[in-house]
Amino acid sequence: MPLIAKVGRNKLSVKFWLAFITSFLWLGVALHLFPVWWMFTSSIKPVPEVYKFPPTLWPHKPTLVCYKLFFQAIGVSYKGEYRTVLPFPIYVYFKNSLIYTLGTMVIQIPVCALVAYSLSKLHSPRWSRILFLAFITPLLIPAQIYLIPRVLLFKNFPYAFKISSNLPSVNLMNTTWVMILPFCYDAFNVLLFKGFFDTIPESLVNAARLDGASEIGILRRIIIPLSKPIFAVVSWFSFSGLWNRFLWPLTVLTEEKMWPISLRMNLLQTQLESEHLQAGMSEIELALREIGLGWNLIMAMGIIQSIPIFIVFLICREYLMKGIRLRGFK
Image 1 (cartoon, rainbow, N blue to C red):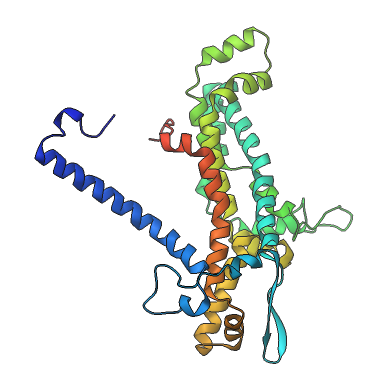
Image 2 (cartoon, rainbow, N blue to C red):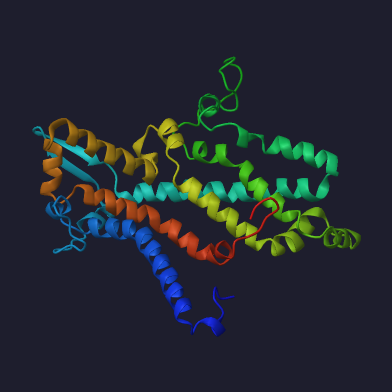
């Protein structure tokens, strides 16, 4: 439905306000897209032009030197010795992020869907409310509070402490599992799933039960086909949150070959900032400039990191743009 009916658009005042609203909206779009444009153009600028003032909106001599580093490591000569700046090619960190994110989603989304289905369709209203409050309790606890207990747990998995040498335990630090297992359950996703499952008529579920369908069969043949919108929304929230994790991998991954791209990009940015503040222009920054690298590398890594999120948005955009209405949400 259009904002202004076609019948009244011929009036001069209506045309003015329509043009004003359209211009205002396009201005908002431009302001939101400008940082993306600036990041992309900075990633293909040569180093001298990155630091040029006043800055240019488009590089005079575009270069893809930063994107070529997707398949090679970076090292420079620093104080008479060779120093590694990026020990592994960018694709190694990118691959780690994909493995951690997709591996977690494969487990997390089915688990949350099963929990929400049991709360919505299997329990009596009284027990459903009690269990629902129990399952969403993690939303009330800040993630920083249970950071240390999680670390202790995965150091001596499945025990939080090494009680006895006779009890078998395994150290999962610096492994793929330490990035997947803590996030196999998400209370917010359960909240979203249950809100949608509650809108599905009980008559459909009861009719399937009378026909002899099992609960898994009902979930697979009735609930999931009707719940594609909420699965798309949950997939989007889950992917964007898991892909941008920083604090947890910084805590549990000490071997750089296991780092995700978000951690590597942040630490590279911190390194450039600290060295620039300490000496104005450090030897390592000068060495990076000689091979055409600097803040343009950070921008290129930012572009590479944002590509999967953009792809997932395109896949889920139909349901995200419709604005799924859940019980208690609008």
